Amino acid sequence: MGNNAFWGIKVPCRQPGVWFKVGLFILLFIISAGVRLPNISTSLSDPYDTPTALVLVVLDVWSADGALKNKFLPRVTYPGQTNRYVLSSGVRLMNKEGIGYYTSSPPFSLILAYLVHRVLNMDATVVSMRLLNLVLGLIAALFFYEMMLLVLPTSEYRRKISLIGTVLFIFAAPHLWYFSQLYSWHIVWEYCWIATLYFVFRILSFEGKAGNIRRSLFYLGLANFLAVYSDFQGVLASLVIMSYACFVLGERPVAKGIFYSCCISTIAALIITIVQYSSISGFSGLIDALEHIAFFRSSLAAGTNFWLIVAYHYVSAYALLLLYVISLLLLIMLPKENRGRVYFDSKEKGFLYLTLLPVLIQHGLFLSWCAIHPSSILRAGVFICGSIVVLSNVFRRTPAGWELRNWEKILKNALIIVVLAYSVWQYYEKYGHAVQPGGFAVLGEEIRRKARNDEIVFMAPGRRVWMPLVYYSKRNIQGVSSDADAISWMITRNLHKGVVFHVNGDLIVEKISRVVADVKE
Image (cartoon, rainbow, N blue to C red; front, side, top):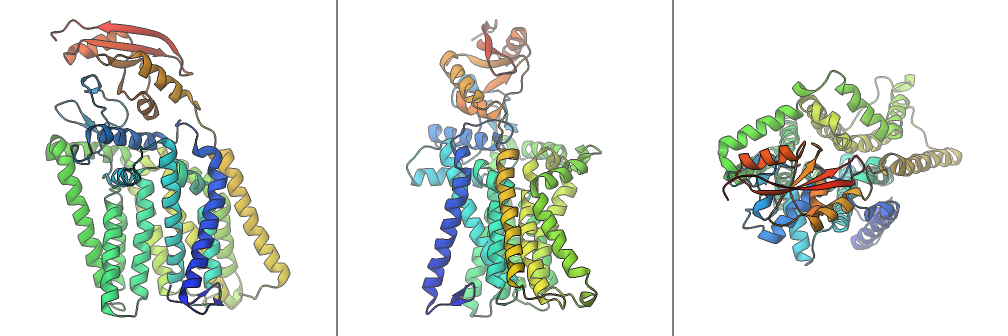
């Protein structure tokens, strides 16, 4: 970043190069936004939009009741007595007043979305959440690019190779989808994690004044704090960074600052989260809920074929990019003149360690969650695209590396274009097919119109209550098997009136029953 050149082109001062870089990323953003445009305004559906719907429900509640009044807790129970005690989607912990909260992850992603919308003086909508995700994804891509510049040893190809890797990072099919459509805690965590890694390599690369290092250590701690405050699994990534800092401490004394910065920020984020969530139903209640969530997500709850499911997620999402990585490895390792003479720079090794190990730990500890959620492979995208950058640079340094002739350059560029074109095609083919498109919005509006404020809302027959439906109906909905089951449910909670929506598999209401329980009001 202190270099007055971009792609090897010298400029008279730093500022023109900076603006050229900003303009280039804005152009990439516009192109990627154009690719995603047909899906930006689509209504929430299954199976991809549940986390976004959950965030929107919490923002609805905060907008109605006040975020400070709710202590910035992720409350998923709408205001009103008839929404209480309902165990619809997203409820992980319920207090004695029957108000449910989502406690599977810390609340920073929710707080960020809330503050952005408050600053802009607008209500959160499906479109605004996706646009926010787009902007955050662009910022993350810029951090990724700057990080790769720090990782690679100085060379005339460094900027070009880093830019190619960044373009692949932006336009990879799962990134096109999830970094726009899905606003959630683990997506925001990834953005913060990329920024955290950038500051790690910035500090390790810095040779200047101690004051600048202290400032970078502060930014590192802030980025890591926000990462851990976004997702509990951020703790694992932070521990990996701390272990790496210990490993390089001998040759880079500044790594001690990296260790303490990550350690302090991680502990601070955990303490704040525990204090917040313990206020719901006590510390013991929080621990019980977290234990249940951890077991459900862990490898202990995984089936014997779950590794194959995770492998399928990778192949279906990153097929050509993985082939790209394998091809580069073969080009580097197979030629005889390269054997024993191939080396990775220390920061290149560090990048591979810091981006691969958290992914392996996540899959090892939380295999069930990774298999159930295809988006779990996203955090490997940093490693995959970064590996292409690192291996391309390593190949340039090998004895068997060569200066590309014109036709070879054309072939290489054509390959990159094919990869990008395939990613865009895959984006539409794999991710662009919603289950019940528009169905939740229509059904939710019908429930809003026909359910009275003094009635508990039920849905039969025992159907799963989807979070997008909760958002569109603005009501918490309890799944039951029958009218009798709804009455029994109300009796055990001393509630009086309810309405049962009998919904078929096409999300069409076949019958509406109003039920009354014989209880003391």
